[in-house]
Every structure is written in structure tokens, then in C-alpha cells.
Image (cartoon, rainbow, N blue to C red; front, side, top):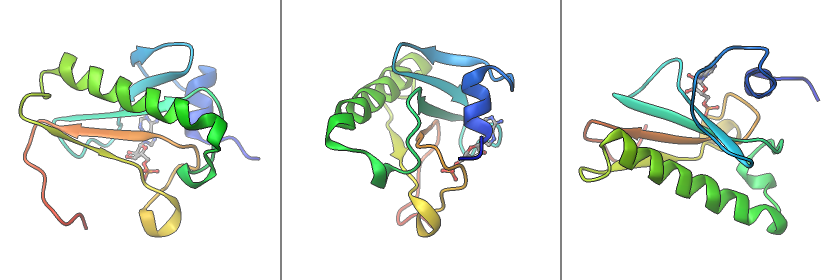
Amino acid sequence: MAENVFDKILAGAIPAPRVWEDEQCIAIRDINPQAPVHVLVIPRTKIETVDDVTEQQKGLVGHMTWVATEIARREGIADEGYRLVWNCRRHGGQEVTTIHLHLLGGRSMKWPPG
Ligand code: AMP
């Protein structure tokens, strides 16, 4: 499996300041932010898409969701609200084939998404 940008960030080969780090995941700011706050939560365990998450890994996904909510509180966007997004494969708009949870906030979001 070829290394992608998030593999390289996790390995420290590409610098990306971490807004969160624990034994299960890291969080970084998106390089091309789509909102005033745009953070990506990335697991240390390699999983290609959210469709590949196994039952044994469902706790990791729950942990990543909690981390995103904690970052939202720290960033001061929790009271107004925010959006959490999992893009999955081609129709979901997934560009990097390592699961990552988008936290977007600091502005009002539109619905439906494009
Ligand atoms: P997705 O379309 O869900 O796969 O999202 C991938 C995201 O990774 C995009 O929002 C990109 O802007 C972001 N991204 C790509 N390279 C980097 C990087 N080096 N550091 C931070 N974010 C990145």
C-alpha cells in the first residue's frame, strides 16, 4: 500500500503542527481550510475508508468523534455549532485514502452539502 500524505505526517516526514495528540489519534489543521476552523482527526491505525472500519475498531471511531468535540470546545466554536464530516471513497469526495474526521466551524454551514 503506497504511503499517502497522512501516513507521512504521522511518521513525521511531513511537518504538520498537531492540535491534538494521544495514543489513538492526532489532529492537524487542514492545509486548505474550508471554514475558519478546519481540523482533521487522523487515527494512528491505518484504515483506508470509514467503510473498512471493523467492529473491533468502532471504539476508535467513537474516540475520534469525542476528540473532535473536545477540539471544538477548545477552539470556542462549540456553542454556535459545527460540522463533522467523514468523506468515503469517490462519491463521498475522499481524496486521501486514510480515514480522517473533518471538524468544520466558525461559520454557518449550508445544507445540503455539494
Ligand atoms: P478528503 O477529501 O476527505 O480526503 O480530505 C483530505 C483533506 O486533507 C483535504 O481537506 C486537504 O486539504 C487536506 N490535506 C491534504 N494535504 C494536507 C497536508 N499536508 N496538511 C493538512 N491537510 C492536508
